[in-house]
Amino acid sequence: MIQKDGAIYIIDFGEARFGHHYFDLAGAIASTIKEDSSEEVMSENVSAIVNGYEQRRDKVNHNQLFLFIQLWYIRGILALLASNMKGNTDYLVKCFQAIGKYKNLLTTCAAEK
Image 1 (tube, one colour):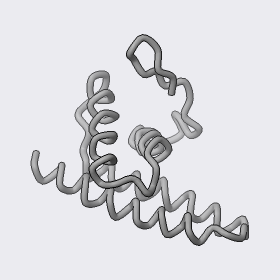
Image 2 (spheres, one colour):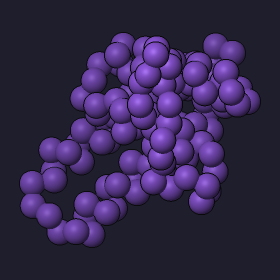
Image 3 (tube, helix red, strand yellow):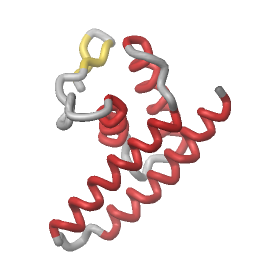
Image 4 (cartoon, one colour):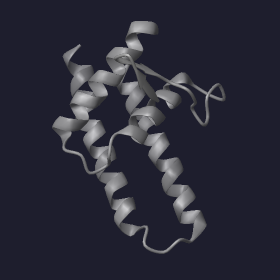
């Protein structure tokens, strides 16, 4: 993502155009918000990203978006486990905690609509 003249431009998604567009949105969210952020910070950032997205695309289904955020993290977790890298335990815990925060955030948003 690039910020220029008060606007954010997306220049590349690693998996762009190879699947559902929510996977790209989930990747943008999960890649720009730290896993150990507070739910308040996550909420503000997710809202900003989703609102910007909805200005150019359809309204976001928050329940579906949460499923793709889970998929994004699970994909990363499986890659870490497959790599046999040491010291990933703390990061894996952060990933699972982040999934829980996104669940709270997005299912609450979906219920409010």
